Image 1 (cartoon, rainbow, N blue to C red):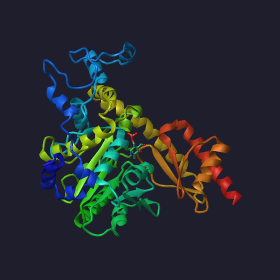
Image 2 (tube, rainbow, N blue to C red):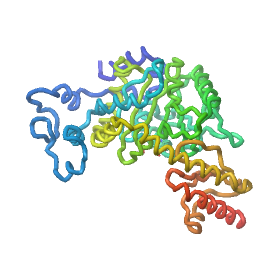
Image 3 (cartoon, protein in one colour):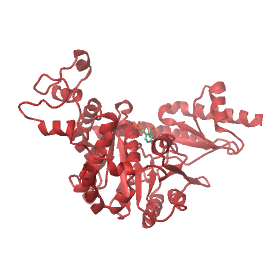
Length: 431
Ligand SMILES: Cc1ncc(COP(=O)(O)O)c(C=O)c1O
């Protein structure tokens, strides 16, 4: 039996829906028992001649002083930062991130695996796309959406992205993803992306909307095996006290045999560690369970075949943050700054001329979306704002501009909105 054949039984036994939803590539891959596998088995041996990394012969890196001096870590942590990471990630980082993910959830929280480390969330999404995408596979994505999903799922794997209008009459539509899947043959496995807080929307659903979203996804799982990819890039950045901040992953895990949520998150936005490229992929199964181990083998094969192993240096820096006694307060301090910007932007947009542009609801994350009047082209507006008003925004077809309030000072946001309104009015006057 091949390595991948051996993984079929534990996955299919624990979750037939998950096995049904795997792509041909996802079924095929298994972590091979080659160098990292054999090197891991040799760790701690008196003579370890397995892995091709340069050391002093006792496990410490022969690092260049110039690099070593730049890393303000304790010597042991620095050594680990300079050597290869295990393909699945550094154990302490995985354990600490799992604790971070589960903080405040209580003892009855659903099972979740030890997160597997990826090179940023993009890589985590690409691994998920390899596992569950593939030629012709339906991927429902609330629209407007982060454009890179197109590259990750459609361009790379040939999946069919089904845009699911996320707003109806200017309000969040929790049924969107399921409406987009309505035309797919019953029984056919599908993938849905749930990105909350959203990019580009900057929206986190209210408790009622969240309930409706989960009910719709659970109903969809009655019709087909459904993998829900929870892209939690903006986890925790929620600014309305009454709006639940926890990931939808926790509301879906273990709720229906036909629905498998997968959590994709990381240090990028949650820890303001954009350049660190530490992401995580988490499955709704207990650490050490056979199904978690089988999925880990598949992910490790995909990681090893593309990036070798994830970056050790930034994992060790993230670990230092995760172990800081006041880490929650440090993260909260960034959130409070963004919350203020969100409030200032909300107030500034409240006064704009609705005949020209309509802000969509936003209360979370890093962004706000404005919808332009029907005759106005967002790309033309973007270029006009750049050329005439010293203002850079993102154009999103067919009718939106995205404002990244995360990268503008609160005090500058009213002037940015004034420029936006003026620019759009000028464009409208041109006809
Ligand atoms: C919704 C969403 N998912 C994933 C990512 C990618 O994150 P990373 O930079 O960690 O690859 C982003 C980045 O902007 C994002 O907005």
